Image 1 (cartoon, rainbow, N blue to C red):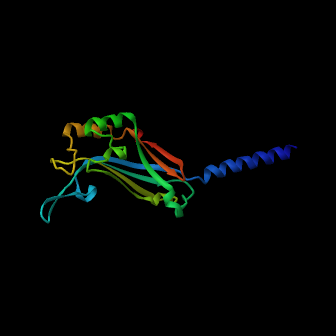
Image 2 (tube, rainbow, N blue to C red; image 1 turned 30 degrees about the vertical axis):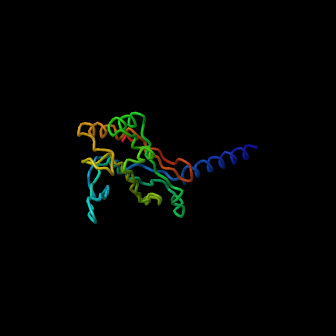
Image 3 (tube, helix red, strand yellow; image 1 turned 90 degrees about the horizontal axis):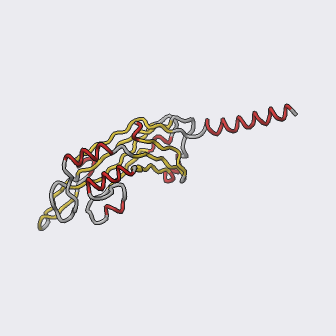
Length: 190
């Protein structure tokens, strides 16, 4: 009887240990947020200024850059990259400051409708392999520096941009794999 109990406990321990030992474990290595106006990073908006003439306007954007490392002992299923999502979830104060600063909640994609601006994400999912790092970036357009019919948002004042930047890390970075949250990083703690 004692042997059965010991064997059962050993099997239970091994099952629990192997589950945690072989689960992917992600670590946020670095986070950086800045406000920039760089065509190479945020792109540009083409404006027709006459027959066959086009001019470019570069929007000002809130730009996040994150480095994530897989510190676990398991690869995330590399063949299923479409099942991996990384999202930025702002806390209520950041949403409020966004609306106060820009006039819209920049973290809600539907807010960009009819503004002439947008948002973007790019990722290198190298962190799907054990021991590897990957990078995730988010770009949220805030406005352009001059009034043009194609864009209805003007870049906020330096003072307002500074306030937005001060609250920009009042958010969480979430990694979701196969509709299951596998990591959540509170950016205020970094």
